[in-house]
Amino acid sequence: MQTRVESFLRGAWEGKTFSGQWASPKGGTRPVIEPATGERLGEIGVASIDDLDAAVKSAARAQPAWAAAPADERRKVLLKVARLLEEHHKEIAGWIVREGGSIPGKADTEIHFTLGEVLEAAALPTQANGIVYPSTGPHRSMAERVPLGVVGVITPWNFPLILAMRAVAPAIALGNAVVLKPDLQTSVSGGAVLARLFEEAGLPEGVLQVMPGGPEAGESLVKHPRVAMISFTGSTAVGRRVGELAGGMLKRVSLELGGNNAFIVLDDADLDAASSNGAWGSYLHQGQICMAAGRHLVHASIAEAYVARLVERAERLPVGDPHRAEVALGPLISQKQVDRVARIVGDTVKAGAKVRAGASHEGLFYKPTVLTHVRPGMPAFDEEIFGPVAPVTTFESDEEAIELANASAYGLSAAVQSRSIERGLHVARRLKSGMVHVNDQTVNVDAIAPFGGMGCSGNGARYGRTATLDEFTQWQWITVKDKAHEYPF
Ligand code: NAP
Image 1 (cartoon, rainbow, N blue to C red):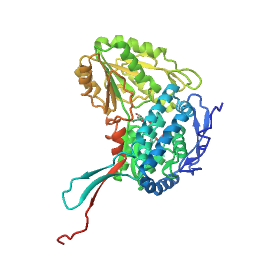
Image 2: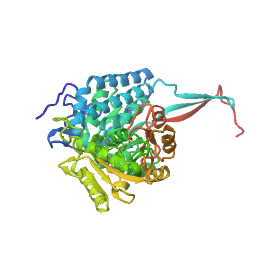
Image 3: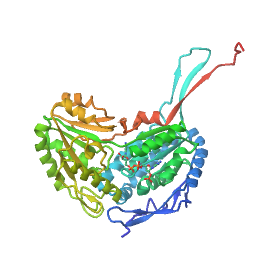
Image 4: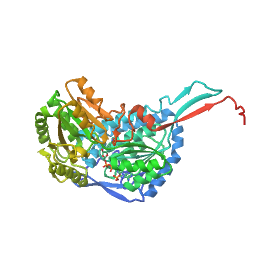
């Protein structure tokens, strides 16, 4: 059954990559598969290393003119992208659902927050971009933010549209050209959609290149001498490799990586709200979110009451094909992910944890799972699961909760549940986490706030309004003398 509406995407991307024009790449094609059914939705063009090289060179040729374009011209393109995104919301959401296994609510939310990223990016070109310094010599002295040149953007499959757009839109708005390498599994919603939006919005040819490809394509983008910066979102293991390669070439690199996020429930929490927040944080998009609640740390005195509520929620969440049925959880993206989740759950149970819900799957459909008696040293505590699993670990004091939360190499997001705002805030401020939410769950994003992690969750890079200004520009100090004078030499 092929139910695609081609009005906006028009099938333009079928078998193609985007370099300002849609063209057949040397790397051939690869089927776009709907994970819920295994159905083939189309064929995406795959970039070879030669295609990537040509794309980077074409982006480098287009970038200076784009950087020199009037600020309002750059803003106009971004505003048009925002309008097109709203106009074609339904069609784009359809792709996020079918290609990525998202429920429609997640797809709508992803588009909503992507729109926020584009609108924030649209405000960047017209911001004052310099500083005039007081004179300390016979010259005028100023500093200007200038673009980096060609930015390589590498993205994963779980929130393909927003994770690509949050880098592509500000980088382009600030006068850079971009070569985007989306994950092959979601190259339509994370690649072709962006190409079509910017194409239709009138972005000059060459400024955005969309080159779906595998790890070799990613590495060749990182290693390309004409790429000034890499913006990478993905796993910590691959991020480390990307960081090594980019560091070796003295290239700027922004790494947004994995998480194993603590969801802390203090003994004075509202348990109905806490269990609802905990279920949302662990099960939204089947737990395949970098900010997912990966460890439920619960005060021992209320642990059983909390777990009973969490289990009840887990058991009533329907799992199935999100395109054809009303479900709360869709499929995991691939068999590889199912195997990973099953391995972590199995080994954790072998190590002494108890299954209170789920821990089973049919095909790619993994049931919402609750594990109790989870302790540090067990895989479900130590590793990022990236599946619909809520591992529960108990503590006896706020101090112990903080210690357990910080007993992870990751530090992306965290949450604290407490009826006392003061106590919640006190705990929050002691967590080694780039983002902390009191009386909310761990999955939060806002285009105006700094998004990013500590420790193994990143290298200090941040997205969001002012942060992106720092990420995608560099300073140039300029002095001007009325006339040159002679030095002693
Ligand atoms: P991944 O395996 O690291 O892949 C991410 C991207 O890197 C894909 O486009 C992938 O291409 C590419 N890639 C793979 N090997 C590469 C290499 N050697 N050089 C350059 N690029 C390479 O990540 P994933 O498993 O798809 O995504 C899930 C991970 O992303 C989780 O750990 C999650 O926490 C993290 N994530 C972090 C954030 C954040 O903002 N902090 C947001 C979302 C997800 P191929 O897929 O084609 O191999």
